[in-house]
Figure 1 (tube, rainbow, N blue to C red):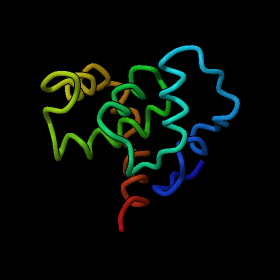
Figure 2 (figure 1 turned 45 degrees about the horizontal axis):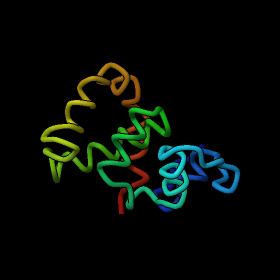
Figure 3 (figure 1 turned 180 degrees about the horizontal axis):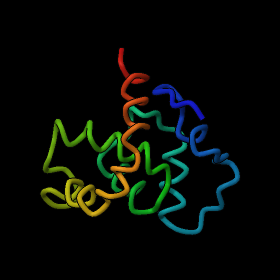
Length: 107
């Protein structure tokens, strides 16, 4: 799938929000996530995406954007940064994908 910064997360994830059965707060968040575009993702969305393995590659890429502006973001200082460190080996495996995304995100 080609990454497009104007694409809704539902398109990227291949999820129809109408098909999500709400059973818990995570399901409610997933419905809200489906309506968001890349530019609308916030620190809490990114943390949850990474932790729940939902669109991780987009979460990792957006985390770089967020951390460059607000390195202390998260439930506590450095929370997102800490999560990125925990996934550093996985992030390294996505290097080429990030380069492609950077090109597509350029205005």
